[in-house]
Every structure is written in C-alpha cells, then in structure tokens.
Image (cartoon, rainbow over all chains, first blue to last red; front, side, top):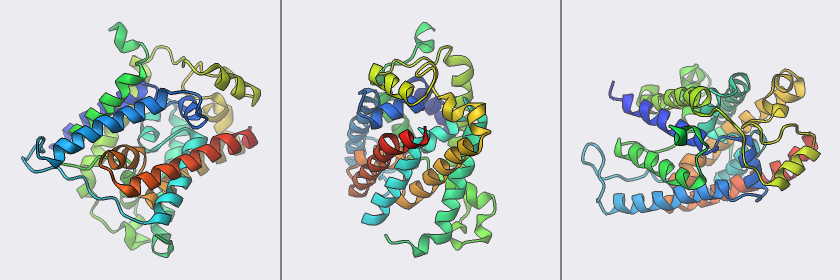
Length: 137
Length: 185
C-alpha cells in the first residue's frame, strides 16, 4: 500500500479545489470573460509558488522521498499539437467548466452529469489514441 | 471549524495547490491529472483497438490512487465542508448569465441549466456534457496535459510547450464562453 499517500494527497487536493471554488462552472466562466481576479489569483499564485519549488528542485535543495533529485518530465514538443489540442480542451473546459482533475472532484457534487463528462473524456482520450499517429504534431 | 466551513479566499488556493504539487513530486512522481483518462482507457480494454494503449497500467497505479482520492475528497467537500455554495460573483457576470436565461446565478457551484436533472436528461443537455467531455479527453491528450500538468507544472518549470498549451486553453475557453455559450442558451 505504498500508494496510499497519493490517495490522501488526492483527498487534500480535491478539498482545496472545492473550498476555493476552483471547480465551480461560474468561476471559470468569470475567468474566461475576465470579469474576476479570483481564478487568475489562484492559478497565478500556484504557478509562482510552484516556480520557487522548481528552483529548489533544480538546485537539489529539495529531494524526493528516495533522496533522488526531482526533475519534472519534459513536455512533448510540437507547435500544432499543443496549441490545437489546448484549444480543443479549452472549448470543453469553457462550456462545461471542468478541467481534468475537477471532472473527478465534481462526481461528489453532481454525480450523473459528472459521469457523463467522464464518459466523454474517456471517449475523447480513446479517439485520440486511435488516430494519434495520423495527427500533425 | 468556522473557517473550514466558510469559502476560502483565493490567496489560500495558490499556496495549497503548490504544496500539493510539491508533495506529488516529493513522492517521486510527475504532477498531472489527464494521463488518467488514457490509463482508464487501457483498463477498459482500449489496448485491443490501438497499440497506443498497450501500456502496463500498473505503472500508473499511484495516479489512479490520486484519482480515487479526488473522488473521495469531492464527496467529503460536497457533503461536509460546503454548507453554502453561494459564490460572490461579479454583478456583471450575474446580469449577463441571467440575460442568457440562467436562473439562481451564483447560488450554487453548478448551474441547473447544465448540471440539473432537466438539463442532462434532455438531448441537448446530454450532448453538451458528452461533447465537452470528449473535447476535454481528446484535447488534453493531444496537448499532452491539462491545467495541472501544463498550466501549473509546465509553466512553473518554464517549459515552452506549456505556454503554447495554456494559450490554446484560453483561445478555446474564450471562444466557448464569449461565443458558444450565448448560442447554446
């Protein structure tokens, strides 16, 4: 049961997102309409503080649980894939107000609609897997 | 206890999300959420249809445990930690959505017009959710990450692809909220 720590971290993360309203459809609508600072403050704050952690990882000030240096995996490169894939995800996010982690968190709030979203997300990932070799990067 | 039950201010969110990321990396793994869609496809048998899914899902067991935690945490938050889902929205947002025909704007986290029973049991409402889901699943896999993996992990580690992805997220989100939502409602 070495993975139990991830379960506890998942519970913590879900509670944080829920309590700061970062799973609310309205909060994302407001963000994309630039009518509130709320989500920008949350995401911006997370990025800035994470960037400090990343520097501490880079210079070995924080090592992982096994004593190894922490190196974030490089993201796959590809101009079309990241911009176009990102835009498709943004469309789904903007309409449903859900990004990936909140899809799972929302199950606790609105079970059936969240199950429909999750089914869609699995279908979407499945379609991607089927045609990924034919898509431009 | 009172603080726990109140809505938490935005400035608590960033640090607590960053601490989650820190712990995830400290536990020896790369922070992100959308790879789980792929892993779940593999478990459901997608490897019979495409080599893309021929992976040992047990390598991702830690991430699936994180997902189980997200689900449990969502239920705990919904049932015990948020007695009042009222959101302090910009009055302009409330007015706009009310004009589009949304009711009780900001009185709960999720609008009935998309998440309510009358919505998802209608053909239109069902399609809105399932198509959004497909876009989320397809888009995150094509882009190689979501808000956690690209916007937070990728931007904070100064990765250029993540900046491009986040620009894409906003292009899509802006098209959706400025143009598609007013057409749908």
